[in-house]
Image 1 (cartoon, rainbow, N blue to C red):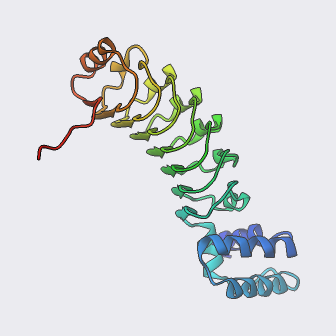
Image 2 (image 1 turned 60 degrees about the vertical axis):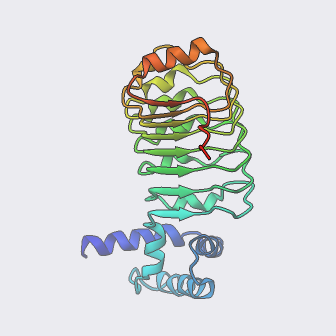
Length: 243
């Protein structure tokens, strides 16, 4: 049997194991993926019929497409918890959960090893899980407009992160581990409660844009930051347009 056919069958078995429970799971995944529900349900039931008689069945491209989906947009769904079904989208690169009502980001995100973009803005999060540090391919992380009071130390493990959006939260400090983000080019931390940045902020040598509007930095701290980041565009105040 060809390798691609074996892989397809393995995928189908993964999605369809568990009989009626998995039919319901498939329907929920279909909802998230905006696939026609009745068509999806029928395809699953047909596949079960083939499994009971033979290891061979007509492969369904929709099911295969769900498993290998690269992007998943679950924004503006009034979600209070992260749907457990997203664990079946093992090949996700972009996940959007913005504009929901999440208080805890409770899913096992460590399984999404290929995730490059994670959007969690406009929720009710007070913290991020330590497992965030296992997203080794993450390039962009947006957690604006939440209620974060601190960041996990593991955020320093995001070594390829280029953009970090933390504006409109309740952060009073940043962990020193953030200085390990050697590829960071954009850091937005406006509208928090910061009075200082970690010592040796110059370690963020590739930082191009640092937005710190509406915090509580002293004049001395502002000068220090500017001196340590001479190549960065640092903004402490909004620039008023001339009429």
